[in-house]
Length: 136
Ligand code: ATP
Image (cartoon, rainbow, N blue to C red):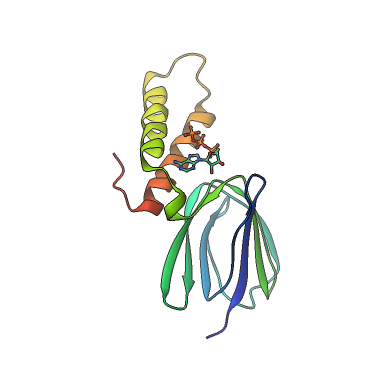
């Protein structure tokens, strides 16, 4: 089966993923994108989500907090604000972040930064999705 190289890096951790894969399902500001080998050149911004990687032997998930993705026919390069494999995700921390953001959004204080709270909620939701933990 044809493959395309996927490289994911973050400013904090450097390279977090580098492997030949069969297909990537990711979420950009324009919606969901399926990337196969020999994809046309593309540069886009990613939003927080549970990224799906199809490779020989099955499918794995990777949390992406947002960032930029460049695609060429041979390679996908993602520079993410943060990226975590399932084993690196602290579930209790994600649950707390989810609860905190939900409470902030429910209280609607006058000084609430709605975009910030919604982004925190989306990050926590995506982390729990990658871990397969039901959203509280
Ligand atoms: P929190 O409010 O718990 O800090 P956050 O969504 O604001 O969550 P980020 O800004 O996305 O956190 O990430 C900051 C750093 O902390 C990154 O290095 C990220 O990998 C790490 N991180 C955040 N939440 C988790 C988690 N639940 N498990 C593992 N690492 C995490």
